[in-house]
Image (tube, one colour):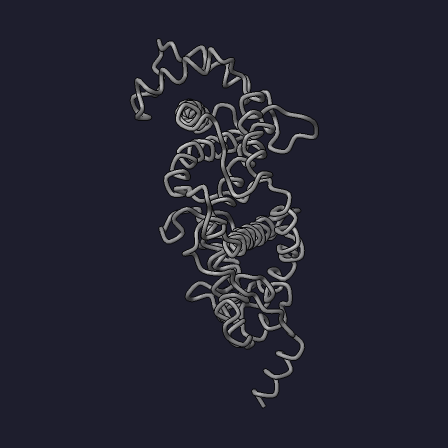
Amino acid sequence: MGRPAGNDPVIARKLRTTVSESVPELAAEIRVVAEQGASDEVLADRQSLLQLQRVVGRATEDGRDAARMDRLIAALREELRAACDALEEHPERETTPNEAMAAHATLGLRKGTEMRPLRGSKNRPGRLTTIAEHLDIRVETVTHGNPSPLDRLIEKIARALVWRETEYAAEELRLAQRAHRQPAESQLRVDWVTRFEDYYRVWTPIVALAVDVRVVLTTGDSTDPDREHFLIKALYYYSQYVTHLQDFTEAHGGFWFLADAATDQRVANAVVRIGHEGPFTELDDSFLRKRYKSAVELVDWWPSESDSLAEYLDKWRKWVEGCLTPQPAGPCHVHGMLMACDQFAVGIDQSWDAVVDWYPSARSTPALDLVRMRQDRRMEKR
């Protein structure tokens, strides 16, 4: 499970700056590629797409090589393929419908569609036919409606690009954070590895809890069995969290000794807020700890029909479902806990990155002079 970027204000502000291109802007450029095909000439004029950090990083070996238009085009084509694949969990399977395969056909990236126009003629079928086959709809409906199935597919490709760019930017920040080291010598002689092993025993269920609650909030259908599955699993991780937190408190007195005093306080505050925002009393937490210790494995812990856990599960369900939207306008206890979980996770991650000394340094993403690069490319082709 990867580390989330979290709600740290510095990281959030950096990501908003780094991922500068909005979904509509990227979608507009993707639409041009869909209409005209992913040829070198078409991709060379897509300014927003060419300046995605993943594209620039791949083309320049993270700033080690000079930027060249031919390498940027090749990197962009690979990034578009990756964004298309991201639309399905198993894009390579010949399933129907298959949005990943339809997206490849939309951009002319799939074998057999590279040289075909989007809209065909009597003697030359276009890519719309292939798109319709992969979406399992009639070809005349692909471009019908506002938005049409093609419009929605293009937007999904753009969102996949933004999501991948956000992941890349978050990793950039982590690499930059690792450049800031703790002093090599300290009179406290802290065994950092052992200390952080204890921290991450608490970190792991917190991150899993936040992930599962967010899945529940984004599953609109209350009858969806997956929603109940993740709801129960989130309670399991909460039980694991309060158990490991008590173990940590008994072993270390609840002393969060991290990279700096401000982070110590943020992490301690996050722990307090998780307990405050949740639906359970201290007595409830005691029951959940006892239940977890008696059945550590998820399969053994999972509630049965006549289970004493049912009362706590019902309280947990009502608490989670009290939040009806993934992005509430006003105060919300569920999102308050999620923010505290993210604050805790980021605080631990940043402190670990500041302590260790064997990670690589931050990557470099060079700025591009696309106008000059296009001129150089035209001169080379003469």
